[in-house]
Image (cartoon, rainbow, N blue to C red):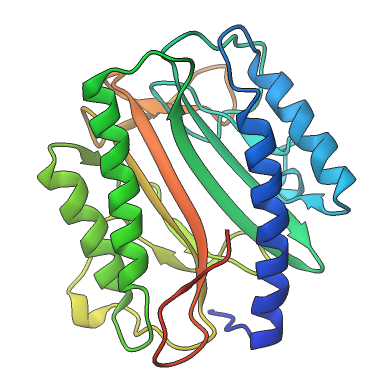
Length: 252
């Protein structure tokens, strides 16, 4: 069941998203060689508390942290740990806040340190472009499948692979709501949802350099990695459509 939001509810989510971006900008500064991922999470928790909001992810059953912090071949959901970041590592910061009854969600992948590999730089730029173009398709009257199709086209034409078992999602009072927002066109376009005012979703571009196959890591709850250990990245923003003739409003 899809829960469409009112303009007032979307405004609340926008306010929560503004707080979330402040937290993200602060914790990204910590992501340097020699830092443990748990230290980034500790800073996030302190900031979230200081802004008077709650950690959305900590409300998920059996998840106890404010962030997910996958590194390199890890795709999503990796909890903070004793893992020490190294020069040239690929780090994803995935984070959400709960503000006045509503959730917002955001993810970004970037290189740690000053090392800049051209191959990795292109890989990351492709994900950023895919998300930007997908958001541009998220407008009233379009099919939601146009968002999915756009992500798939940008990623695959550059030689990368969509992790098809993981998707974006609706978001609001619950962190994960209907509808699924696929990173590929999973059915005929005209059978996908028609976008209407009040729809709020977290669009996610989840992809890898070498494979669409993922595996769960034994003895490491929540951790998912690429089956061939190739690099993975995720770019995510929470977006809403409010008016018929306007583009999506980016909430995070």
